[in-house]
Image 1 (cartoon, rainbow, N blue to C red):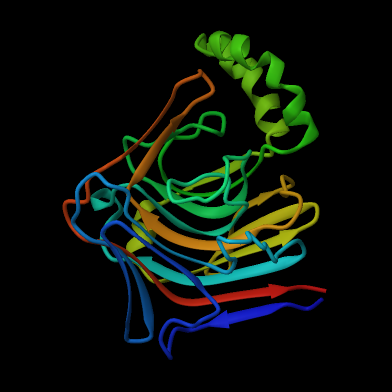
Image 2: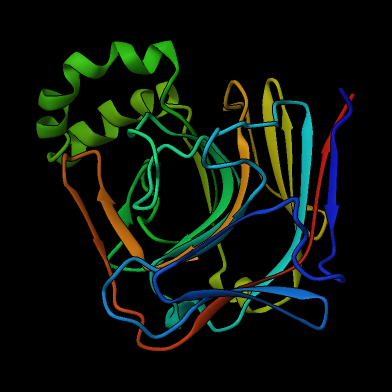
Length: 263
């Protein structure tokens, strides 16, 4: 089946999108650009989001081979942003406005997070910032590690043991990450994800920034969002979740979204 979805936002917000406006958030069209906005609010959850699947059904449409192209920027420098933002594919494993029980994550996306977010999922990589990333925690190898997770987390508080133990765990979880220059976010760039059955290639303006064999399995849905939540998830066993008050407006700006199922 040759699926195709293309939107330049020149005629408003298309009915093809499932729109989420939670808390102090808004979606605006200006000069053929879609602004996903979080407005000044309390610490309640604020999320401006579009997906191509329905919350009522979670009818994910995309599986490899597929190519995603997004032309985007942020409305403010990365060091003035809070929460998380990005675009790509995921299985909607969890979010505060989700209508399903949490599940293990599968995703490939361009992902931003601001402190106090600390998700150090790749060995030696920072726990926040602007990244190209993949994860597939539903792999059978990942399930086989569950009984060993508590003692492994304790051992990985010792740096030499973290260096020895975590790389094979990372591979089992299908995690690949490439930190990106956060200055890219305030500039207009075209981002591409070429998702193949055995590989994923991330590119910016045609230049590859990450190529990995960690290709998530199964169908996923497209998502683009900006919110005010943070998470702490580290190999050393630290976990926390919360929300940062939005004290000044912030936005993710989309100029074009193009998804194509390849032959």
